[in-house]
Length: 316
Image 1 (cartoon, one colour):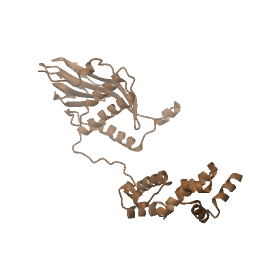
Image 2: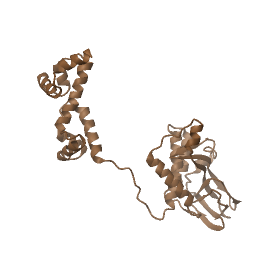
Image 3: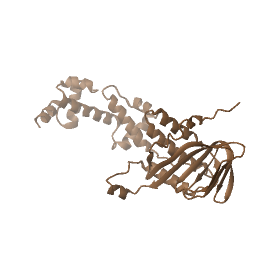
Image 4: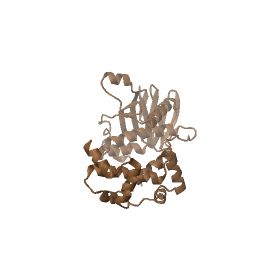
């Protein structure tokens, strides 16, 4: 009974991905796809010594064979892969008794010269600093990978199939999906050769500033209703005391009640200018218990009444 081969569908249109003019940007690099397909070596098939000026990623999803890189022979079996190029002399041979399938990604990778782009009135797509750093790290490691096969322990192979399926189904996000697949193949290739796992340094948040931002978003969204410190703290999954300290630290020493009052008064000022509502109506819509209470708070804060503020702004 034959075992299902997950990449069988890629044989229907072996050149599907190569028909696309794929040129993607990752960090400060341009990656141009030259070959991106599944091919089958019949039993005993030999590809004599040759080399490329670009990188070529060879993955073996089924079968076995041999590769010679420079002068060293290595056995190949299902689940392995190896990298050749630029200018790496290599020889490939399928096992005499059985065919060998190979997923091939052949790419030309160049670092973008921003000055040259400027001369051509072109610009490099915007990139996140973390993406730039990771692309740089990956490219440097690709140049240093050993000339020997290893196991595809981080499962780069499934990204060949995902890219192929995206090209055939043509669903929304086609280009981004294929770009993601190519980058994943590069990243997972590098990771497979790592001697030991390294802890990635990911961007971290200033949690005080982040929680203050979330708290302010909640206050602005709910200021017209009843808002109490305990409710806001509960939404952030922290204590009321901790939230009060965050407000003091992030809001120039203001307390929660002072911040809430400021937010409500901002809304009152907008209502005074944008509507002809009465002071009582504005007060009730912006979280104040009555027009007279708003009158008292407003005058204490600004030195004049809401009605005076409206008159002054209209005249100006």
